[in-house]
Every structure is written in structure tokens, then in C-alpha cells.
Image 1 (cartoon, rainbow, N blue to C red):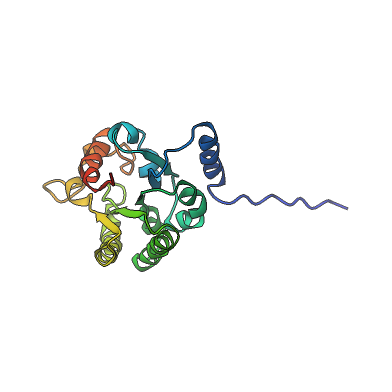
Image 2: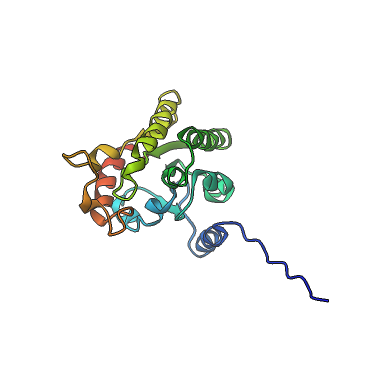
Length: 205
């Protein structure tokens, strides 16, 4: 009789999350640092430490992720580090996958409330979902999610919202091409330089 083969189910992003733990074993992360997490716009921010040399920053972004993935791995991305601040960029892939702005807000709230419940001394900074050449047709929905999240931060003193959108748009109201790689989605060094300038005033000391 043929033997049934059962493929081992591996959780999405399990390898990336395991790699973070391995990195921590080789080089202990900063105590009470600033954890940047979320999707590829964070993962590909390779100049994070040099962009914020006076801040104990730690990059824990994993490409392709949605807010639900960040929530799923909260105990591995956030909890071990006891950060003074979490900088979160996620929601971009959610909207692109057809997730409603209201659901993005719901996932954000889940993250924010768990953060404040488990780590009440940790501040949260949410980077607005950015406009991009590749996904500009969806920017109206992204803005709907942004506005809901921004409203939440206005009523929670430990949370902040930073809007990277306006400076990423040109005089024609469209995304500035020089800020994006050839795929129209991921950013160039000029894009990260802009983010650095906008985000820096919000980082905890």
C-alpha cells in the first residue's frame, strides 16, 4: 500500500523569526532599545543604525508581512526586548491583499492594546502607510486606515502617528519617482533619507 506523506506545515515567516533569535544569541540586542518592526519598508532599512546613531535601534522587520503577522509573532518580535519604544510600519501589504481599512485598524488596535497591557512603559510610533508608485491606486483606502489609526493615537498618550505621506508626494500630487526602486514599491536611499528626517523627532531618547 502506498505510504501517505505528510508535509510538515511551517508557519509563514518562521525562518525569518528564527533568524532574529539566532542574531540575538550572537550579538545581544540593546537593553531598553527602540524596536523597528513591520514589513519590507522596515526590513530593507539597512542604514537604520547609521541614520539614528544616538539611538539604540533594532531592526526586526520581515518582508511581505501584514499586521496580523506582527501580532502573531508579538512575543518574539517585541516581548523579549522590553523596548522603550516600538516603531511600527505595517498595513501596506494588508490593503494590497484586499484587507479592508477597518480590519487594518482592528489589527493595529490589537497590537497597540497588547503592547500597552504587557509593556505599559513602552511608547508606540506608527509610521503611516506610504504612497507608492506601484500601489497609488489603493492610496485612498490606505489613507482611510491611516486616519483611523491617527485618531486612535490622539486619544492614547503613549502612542504617536507620523505621516510620511505628504513629503513623498510631488507637486502633481503623485509619488516622487526618485524615492522608489524600479519596482515602484520599495524605497531608494533618498526615500530612507526622507523617512529618517521625518521620523527622527518622534524617537524616544
